[in-house]
Length: 73
Image (cartoon, rainbow, N blue to C red; front, side):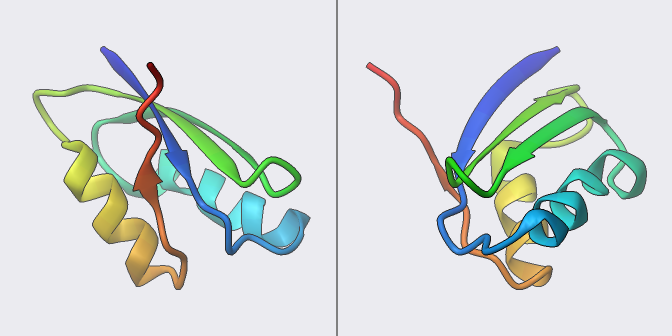
């Protein structure tokens, strides 16, 4: 299992965050999603053998949001 933090600064409300959290139910390989529109971030725990960060970014884009991997140093 891997964890990634994605910046999703175009979330505007709790419904946006809930919509992104539904990835847990709809995308195979996603274990958990914690999205916060206040912080503009989404943390995803996923099975790296089934899904990639690029897959997560693409699915987020299809939902109407822009996601960028947060490069934490």
